Amino acid sequence: MDIHTVLKNVGALSSRFAAERNERQQRRALVASDFAALRDAGFLLTGVPVEEGGVWQDVRHSARPVCEILRVLAHGDSSVALVCAMHPSVLAVWLTSPEVPPPFQEAWAAQRSQVFRTAREGAWWGTITSEPGSGGDMAKTKAMARPAGGDGGYLITGQKQFGSGSGMTSYMITTALPEGETTPDLFFLDMRGVRCDGTAGVTLTSPWDGHGMAATQSHAMAFADFPGTRSAHPGHLLTRMEATGGFIPCAFTAVIVGIVEAAVEAARRNVARRRETLRAYERVEWARAEMEGWLIQQAYDGMLRAVEEGQEGRRRATQAKTAIAELAESATGRICRVIGGGTFSRSSPFGYWHEDVRALGFLRPPWGLVYDNLFEWSCATFEE
Ligand SMILES: Cc1cc2nc3c(=O)[nH]c(=O)nc-3n(C[C@H](O)[C@H](O)[C@H](O)COP(=O)(O)OP(=O)(O)OC[C@H]3O[C@@H](n4cnc5c(N)ncnc54)[C@H](O)[C@@H]3O)c2cc1C
Image 1 (cartoon, protein in one colour):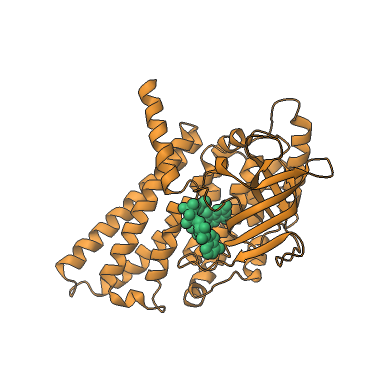
Image 2: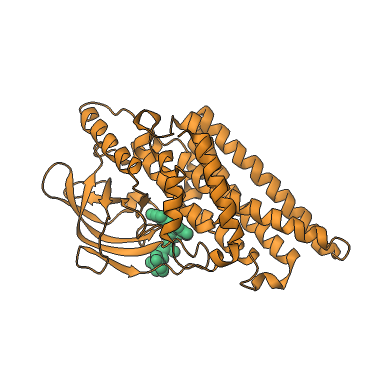
């Protein structure tokens, strides 16, 4: 299967999801058959390199088509699309680093093959990295990792939250501070068949109850001596994250761009019908919503271009993600005002979309941290 076939297959599924929109927007949980259908559509291969039987080439060639798949999927179901965005984003840690410096190359290559094999064979990957009090900053990780059993095996203990796709994912990445070390590192957890009632070292402490992205199962969990496997390039969490080159914010943003497109399109039909009766205020709000929708498209294209060209990809992708987060909240809010008070009804899609797009500003790096980063990047250019 090639990436264009995956896009076509996912597009067909998304159209079916869109036809079921009202029921889907009221869901509070993920449905396994959606993920089986997406697996059959080839979606899992977005996290597997071409040479290992997948559809990922490199950031330059694959960021845009993978983001397109997520954008199109979000037309049909916001929560499913966000959970799906985690899969290639997490696997990007391995996808974007075919090689690491000696003496780690051999172990890294073996781990890559192992990780990609799981995805090829049907495993969904997700992340449960966020921790209470960390503000989305991995460097502030407090969870601990105690070596156990050799061969990169550890036991992880700590509080984690916002694990989108919990219960649906086979593997989750996380961060923890290895015993006796000063900086956190990356681990992955085998969650297959694990009961989250405390009997296996994982307790579901807070089931997800989001206003938006309501069916993402972004649960909070407490881990107690739960087995995890350490990155085979130990001690280089930041280097490996930097190597993803801005792809991760692009993937999150693609989902929100898809939601805004669906909202603008649905609103356009409503506005066209009511054209003669709209008040001046509603006309202005609609013109502004369309303007913001257009700016979102420009920023989305710009972030993908920067990532493809490797020109300050992370900085530009982070800027665009943040700008689009602000514009998407504004545009969908204006649309609600134009369409009317009925958007509060659960039978109208617009209020759901407005809440769903609010997720982008909180996704990594979340608001506070992102502005710290943007300011630091800017200061670095003063110094050059
Ligand atoms: C829709 C959505 C999906 C996300 N998906 C992921 C993901 O898959 N993996 C990941 O690592 N991070 C995920 N994040 C988290 C994100 O990347 C940031 O790390 C996080 O939003 C930073 O938040 P904060 O520190 O401002 O959170 P704060 O608002 O300070 O969060 C901390 C508080 O949120 C509350 N909280 C946390 N989880 C829950 C829950 N399940 N139910 C109720 N209350 C809760 C707790 O009171 C906790 O102390 C997601 C965030 C959102 C909004």
